[in-house]
Length: 455
Image 1 (cartoon, rainbow, N blue to C red):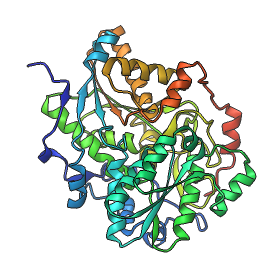
Image 2 (cartoon, helix red, strand yellow; image 1 turned 180 degrees about the vertical axis):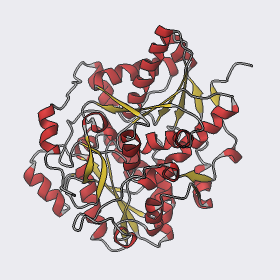
Image 3 (cartoon, rainbow, N blue to C red; image 1 turned 90 degrees about the vertical axis):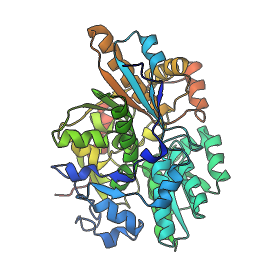
Image 4 (cartoon, rainbow, N blue to C red; image 1 turned 30 degrees about the vertical axis):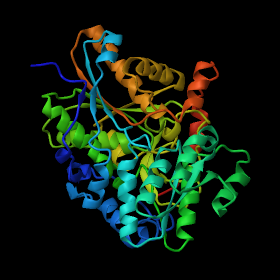
């Protein structure tokens, strides 16, 4: 067989026309969202007060394996999809490994990340419903950037609450959002009642995704003609992101490759869930087996040190309760550079799969993550986002194990986006100012003791 090319591209007509819903193949379905007042499963009617109706239907659908992608969304996808699957020959050589390393690169659009895959879908359904606009939160800014682009495309208003530490660290990401017409507010803010409450209880806080979600939800439900949209965690988001894994599997099939190990960074679960969904489906159906590894920051270790329990999805406790691996909705991570991975919980789908032993998880400190990012940049010529660099670190470690054992395993990881708006983080790393804060057991226990009682 001839040498596999550096980049494996699909043809335009090979872009998937359906999303894959991994829940259809799960024996143990993710637990339902609970109404925080009644502790009963949320009904479609209740959820439609916050989310678009079509998205609610997707959120609650545990049984339909494939869902058609509307033509308007497919037309938008064709502007930047299919994205390349890249053989990391240079990184392999640098490591001296016997492993084959591939990465699915999702940074080839202006938002710089995979987030656009779901942003355009959610904006489409909001426009279809006749809404005026949407509200959302963003951590590192990739989701807010993607949503602002999608809303501009469909002529929707977009209100973004950006975690304060990221708002201050990443002014250029903020300005891209404003260029596309979004309003951007540092969170927590004095614009909402929940924001005022959080500031009163935690003066000087640098914020968290949980805080920003609370503000965005309050703004949506109190503003006529608006709904809330979310960039990760929810079932509907993992559904939209399945296009990543579907393309990856098609590309691997074209070159006759089958991965042994699939690795993704994990914050709320959108890219990891999207990347692994079709492979996990094969595993669930007993057709193939894969090692699937989630990589998270040691500063926000929901999988590796959290508890599988019902918890609020937001710090202000205004959202439904989700059963997930969580550190507690009050947990506010250190203001480090893990960016969009600084969420206190994890997707209910991925949480259930992890709980059932179908995937692994590990955490890394941020300096070792940036060491991996720098090695990758110098080898492969792409400056990775801090989030993506967690997966890079995981892939490097697995490749080095192969070097020691002589095994010729195939490793696939998700390169979720570029780090060109993250230069403050790289500056801190190069200047030796980056620290490796890891929460103590006592800190985590204090938040877990406050989990809501649902039984």
